[in-house]
Image (cartoon, rainbow, N blue to C red; front, side, top):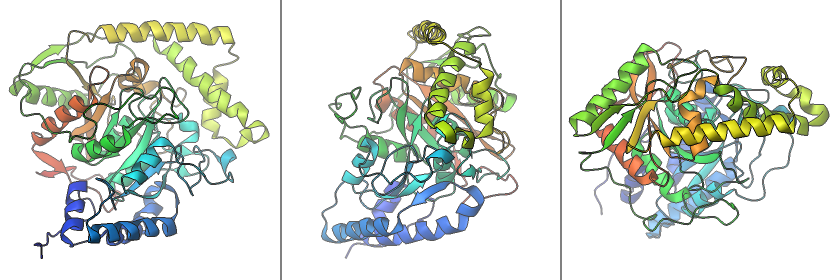
Length: 477
């Protein structure tokens, strides 16, 4: 009989959980029941879960338990409890897109590509996570779900728009989540909540409807967990007309780098517009750069890529997208979050010509942004200008709630992969760094993030009991 391993289930890694399944110290059914019980305890304070299908999840976990007992696992996530964002269709669960006018729609009858890949790998989809209206806020305020809160400090935002995903992972609810990202919506909550997320190369993780700027992205507590999810969901699906073909090594493990010597790292500390990075953010950025330099990387300070006023055109694209969704609700548009409606209406009437001009400006700017990175292998930057703002706020600028996404949004426009990972703290709030690389370099970027994670020297002290007062973020690794 194999020797049993004591598994610290809540807050553990996928690898630790899987080891418990393998040696019999825990089962998928037991892990799910712990998840359900923990969810009942913390959901009232963080408001991270949009919907569950407990009966279906128990059936999936029971089937996975039998497979582990018989030694015939479906895949690397067999029996692992996960969630998907409200905006990602999953059979038997509702799609609401964070907004009250969609309340009452029928449950999904078809899995979106990320949900389909998760089920094929044996993952147990416990439920859906909360998000703001239309996914168009970088916070967790919703007309349907109310306010999502950060378990590190319940007074502050978990970020958005994958708000519930970030909060639930930090609180130890499941072992992975799928979010979506149009201006930073997996990376921003990852930064606020001290977890890891990747916005992949555009098309690498298929999703519906096809988009040139919005991606589905894996989220987890460690780089290794995100890499496990990425290997599963980053597979071709013909339903997404922009999906990339499978990589030749898509089934291979994503291992940390043994050596980073010679990598040319561009440090981007100022975008040239919007909110400047504060002292704690810049201190964390420099600490990461110093670790890379000690490993033999060449560190190059990049100039600010933009001038003040560049955001206006990008904001126009966001407003038009939000307005189109608002108008689709007809008479029920009055139920949409008032702050979101105020932002849309403040833009005034916009014509197709206005949109085309804005699109042309953004296209030119993203080309210039991509060009400035060609002499470096990776870009190291902040994710957020500062670590925290109140949970009730729509953004750092409530009149233009995506304006503070300056360090993240342009990688959506260029289609590049970008990883958010925690690397510091500010008054009990996690502070993150962002690593971005050339298109198709997702696996190398995750490997570099894993290298940095190993040398951080500390690991998050997860707020499994959500905190009303900020406390220490880190414990010794």
